[in-house]
Length: 214
Figure 1 (cartoon, rainbow, N blue to C red):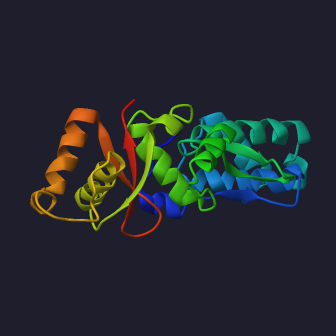
Figure 2: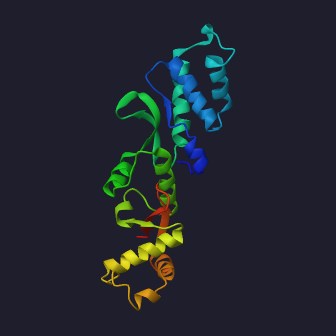
Figure 3: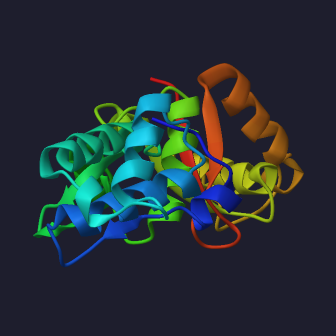
């Protein structure tokens, strides 16, 4: 699984080929996706691609068996380059649509927490952040604490600290002393340092996912 910049995720070739199972169609499309991702091809594979579908290839150069082997080899390379939480292959709903798809365990875990899974570049960016924090699909439900609002992780953390205080029984709606004197960003820093909380950017501007170490 690869960790990619937001720019690379936005230009990622999520859908590689649709509406065909013909090797003569799949092979150049897989090759183009590999080039888009700047994947390193072995010398024998690169030579075989040039022979089969290169600019100087001819009808006599074509071999179904060799093309199938090249497609399988490219599929392995593309799968290895899939973003965190994704795999390369055929769509569950369309066996002739090939691309990068969210793994079932992550899809189920995100759905359980009400996190949108429709925009792959945003989901992949979130999964990379979760992976960096040691969160897996199996541990997401225990680690996920909801969302908070703010113009920065610190501001969102302060918002979450207020939410947590409310959950613990503090009557925030009164907002009287000593609540008006509380430094909620400092409270958030205590949660970060002492309890392993983190704020991860969500899809909407000014919204962050809150997770904690488990």
